[in-house]
Amino acid sequence: MRRSTLQCLLFVVSLGMIAPAAFAKVTETDFGKTKDGVEAKVFEVTNKNGMKVRLMNRGATLIGVDVPDRDGKLADVVFGFDDIAGYESKANSYFGCTTGRYANRIAKGKFTLDGKEYKLFTNDGPNHLHGGNGESLDKVVWDGMPFDKDGVSGVEFTYTSPDGQEGYPGKQEMRVTFTLNDKNELKIDYSAKSDKPTVLNLTNHAYFNLGGAGSPTINDHVLKLNADKYTPVDDTLITTGELAPVEGTPLDFRTPTAIGKRVDQLTKTSALGYDHNFVLNRDGAAEGELVEAAKLVDPKSGRTLTVITDQPGIQFYGGNFLTGNKGKGGKPYAYRSACALETQVFPDSPNKQGVEGWTDCVLRPGDEYTHTCVYAFGVEK
Ligand code: GLA
Image 1 (cartoon, rainbow, N blue to C red):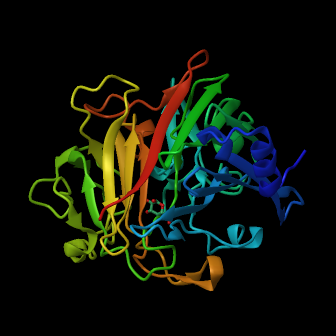
Image 2: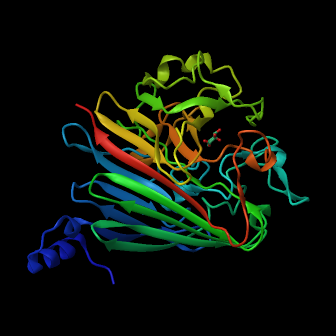
Image 3: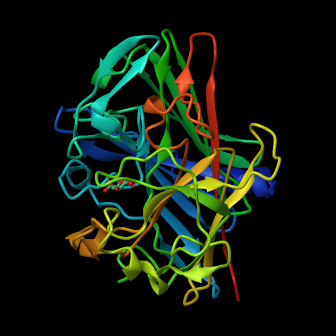
């Protein structure tokens, strides 16, 4: 049964119980049909501050985040499209999707696990990127189940990826839960189980511009990254296996720095700008413990985004492949006008098992993959 926002509010008022939880609500609307004729749905979650998060079942995708600036004015700060056709078009560079099964790159589209070689689609030059071709997790339709309990609201998406989908071994049961609380924190919890040994790396690929999606640049945003090291890449953007210090490079964001200040020093490298995985300082934090990974500040609007995670790495991508294609409201998404902050294990981990300091990405039957990422929004005066 669907209820309108007004109906929900009247219901709550009639009970005379305006508690914070009473404002938390989820509405569901149709978003048209995919090319395959499947119903796309959008769930909108609102908290007591009026912050809104919109989620779509195709790709378990974050399609809108309306957050206040320092004067309380809301703007939608993530890239996306107004209709399903936009999401299915070539202009969609993984905007807001759940990315996988293996987010980021796998060298030459292959890996060996327990002595067996697996071949994947090569969709990024010689390499495999973001889970492959037509059935990567961003392109399939997930089941979405809204919830509203204990003062928080959200949507739980589930999807079963069959054995061999996109070349990955094992039937995988996956769950991605988005939860919005009244502190303007959006929490994403991932979990997965597999019936065969497999590799995986799930993340969210939202593009942020805290001035509002479609603002002309991300170079004026100030970024802090809690990382002493990063993972250098070769000519095809495959990690070399080194963990190199950020010290003395344009990748040193340990002190908050404007993104545009040094980006041109990287324009002629293979990364074309910022497109690197950072090794997060976990400072003795236990496995599963959340630490602050990044903080992005838009000095103009005052909006801030803090990224908190239990993952070992974060890919900071500065929008080098954006070319001005039009998104929501017909606004152009220009070169370097947004950034993605993707929490994850290190790129190409399937081919780096056993390399010192590298991350484990193997999921075995009976074990559970879990990953939490919090996007906490705020304002600075
Ligand atoms: C990631 C990669 C980038 C690029 C984008 C999608 O973040 O690191 O190189 O492929 O996805 O355009």
